[in-house]
Length: 306
Length: 219
Image (cartoon, rainbow over all chains, first blue to last red; front, side, top):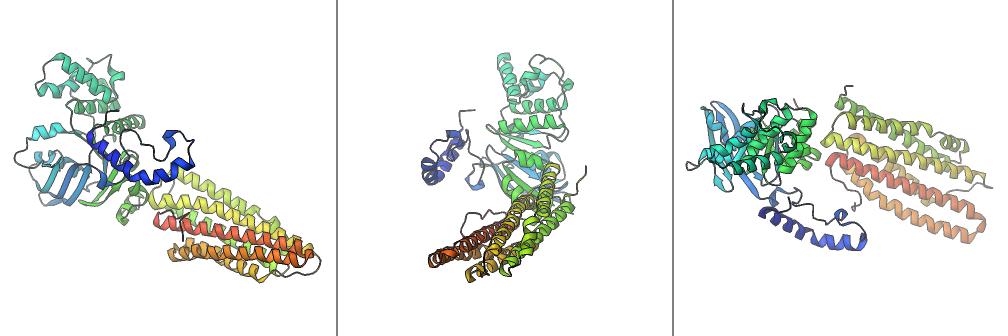
């Protein structure tokens, strides 16, 4: 938690420099007695709050992306930057292209024969659609969690160990350690540590979804794509998964598709509104839910659509 | 309980506009009582505040209900937040009208018929205009009207300064005028506060329209 990654450090120092003149003017003189955490210039945790896309480190850079399923133009000319170690939420009505866009990010659309794609998607500056790309390796770096929890019909332990075994890891101590670490990160360890050999299918829906997240992070991805991860969960399980997402962004970039707009507002640092295959508006969740710039966005989030 | 937010927001808007109209009327009556020496009218304004207080409570209850049962965002959320603030301001303006009425009653008890100074008439005229405009701006989402109101506030502030000078001079000239001058100055203070609150309303209307908070920034 405390050891910051390099981009986060850069962002922190850049933002603090920007604030420096104001901080000198307001805080020292007027509120000298305030505890440090209440001071306006207090650094907020390990990473600074999301605020300006231009200040962010890019994780994905999407340029003029077009996706067709046969004659259906699913994505038209989508260009956007998805920032590193933030939660970016895609919202929009059914069929707007948000899930298609998500699936482009780890080339899941390759599995659909009629899908035709043009434009480019750069992950850390490298085109993921280039011929040289090793797709299984890409999917290791960019993990995915689906709407319905889909644990393997194996034990809790084996679900998390699976990815490592496929990668050829044999040493039990290494796997044990990775399983515990991943389950801890997925906030599931305390609930399952005494029954790691139990079948994963015995877990509740919310626990299964966190298990699937543990499985995804066991192989140390950079990005986790979440396609409506809470739509099959009750409010308590949803709250746990949301809390987990906010912890995970300290180490991973998260991209979430959700129909639940309150969820996008709660967990999203940035939010993209899509409609009929187009990216209509993309900004901080704060701006999107307080003062959206486009009428279409406003109509959708206030429920005036259609 | 099912709530149709969009229909309820239309109602909320209508209720706050109704309250605005009642408050405007209250202010008009208090000032009319002052300038036409109408003691009976002043008495009516002084006692009749319950209706406004009831509206205030109803609107606040309504806002809380909508906030808790629907999760309003963007323009809907801004409207509800602004209505809550406007509600408070309108209720206070009604209190100002009541205070002015009390001053009128006090002045009418003084011997002889004393005419309020022209500066106070000017203040009353401008303040009423600002209040009327702020309600009209809310009714029509009128941005330019809001900006006019914000600028007018400085004029009313200057008139209040003139009233201070007038009161001082009047008392120096004739000590018998002290009670009258103090009452006139008190009315002027209430008018200046009313103009401030009309300005707040205009700023809240700008917040509804544009989502930017303009309070505490120069007009």
